Length: 489
Image (cartoon, rainbow, N blue to C red):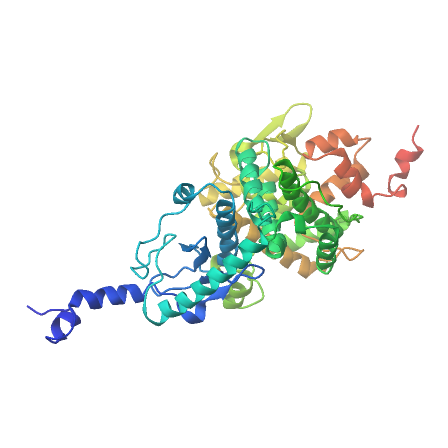
């Protein structure tokens, strides 16, 4: 019988046993590929991501407390792998400086093999392998150990008690905010925004430093750095994230008091609304382009915009989405979650739709639409009946796409195409326009053309506050536009 194993077929009498060769190959498949070893910007060199031959995913490793921790990031994207590595490092730092001992470490992270180089899995705490890769890993581990010693000396108070780092505090704050989100006290979207901001610029700058190092001068330098890219509103929100972590440090006794924060004067730039004539131009263009192919090659669209071939033509849903948004006050994010079960046609003294949408931004009240939204919804139902959709659990827009984040991306892509065709991408004051501008237009039209509508009623129906409407949506309304109301008795 023919033997397919080359080691069994060709091994000489004085060669090692075939099992040794197999184990060697298996071990080499889990050794880091040297050219893929990549540090994480803003973090110690002991934290790095790399690839191995045994997996298509990036791996992360970190030397901490005399041992190497490893884990698969479950991502093929380097950016996502580095983001995972930062979170992984924060968890390790929180555990290391909490003083809870090895038993707690064993609960959070699996124990590594007792013998270095005994094989590497995708879990944390495995060995580093042998051969050239293991030799470089051993050198890295030695540098990791010295770096850990330096870090420990930097983060030790005069009393000898380890000082918790900003990254460790952040990990605890995020755990608390996630628990609040699970209790319904904190919006999940707000938690994700907080985590993204901490991960983007705050932790790479201060993740491995004690909170006492973050003083007024450090905060001022940070605001100057952010000013090169972000608006005053975004800078203020970054300061809120820093303050939240430092306030937690004060609460648990790791910081005596909060440092003085730089004063940020927020300059609001309202989104550019459309005029009625611009809206009609947009809706006509959407109907004219229905079924048309985007003016670029399919490969270029897929590479640049991540749009599959099946969604590269203008869908009829785009015209419906534009009309529906303008007459219903909903946000663009509602387009991807809105199902037929959320819609009820009400015919009484007034005809309208009652939208019982999932809660957004801590607002869960139903929304009532204008009468034109009823006709728009009936057209949607008529069209979806042809394609076999329209059930209670089917989505109103692009129901064939189960990935709703992707469906939202497709709608944005085609709306930007319409704006490019009409030349309306930029507002009269240079502000960029997007799908959100339709909500802005919907609220602005009610302020301009609604007969004596009050801000409280409008705010509650639009699931926002009077302050937001007065600051953002009504900021473009002038007295001359409502001259009839000003002169009325």
